[in-house]
Length: 398
Image (cartoon, rainbow, N blue to C red; front, top):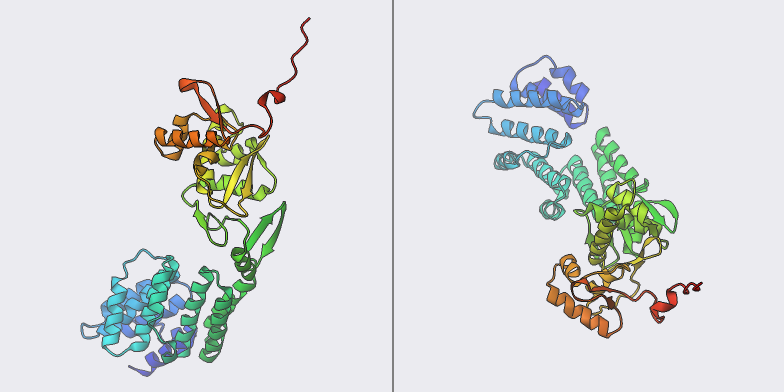
């Protein structure tokens, strides 16, 4: 390799793409095309970089497998930087194997880190951790150690472990100082700034405040019930209920959570959950069904109680499992249900539901009115009082 190519490669390794281009900008041989492509990628022109790298890969001869493999690795890094994650990883795997076979372990490790970064970006944290555990960063130059620690920090951040993330970024800062590459130093400092930046907004009892990541970790580790609008889950310290595929139920849970300990009117719930301007009878019926589904989903974490104007969320401080709790949860909305409707809502047979209703009736927890197919079940309006006491006094007869 001639002196200009060597100097350009050293400039790129030191994070100086302009210095590299000054030496090889007018050359079109295969090594120069490859280095120009890497330089353009460092400058942010990904489209031009990919064109140059593909031209370089074609220009290298059949005996230059290692040079072509390096071009593949560089193009894969550009794809990840531009978030083109749909490409098959087989080409990168083959390039890594070629580099390892030819003794280029530094670039082979770089290819492995690219594989891990891709897994991290698509959310496969367990696979990323398993592959990362196979690499020993102590054997690599400082720049590679920076990448290693950034990946460790990325996994820790996604698992909401800010202390582990901060420790990894501290090690990355030391490695970046040893590497003396400004771009790497800037990336580490940017990642450290994330730890001190606002990460979430806590809404509770009518007020709100901004939380840093360490505070988010403490909140999630506490005993309170949390409606997580980031992951679309409802959780406490031991139980997580995902509503990511149930947007209507999550909207209802979020409204009820924001209003706690107060309630939310039926009109407000209908407007937010169904985007309706007016809560007519059809929307009210739909709301009852969705509230019943929400009760079933959250039965281990909280109840949803009917109030005079709407519904309120009731976290379970000390949950006691009771028989027939699902049937009782649906009847708790204060509405009258038929046994067939309860069976449909619960996904159970009418005979199973009727047995639960009979048991609850024997305990005095539900009551019925009507006969035959017109028979309906509901919880007692005011336990301990006769229903007639709630009726208006009879009007005097003239």
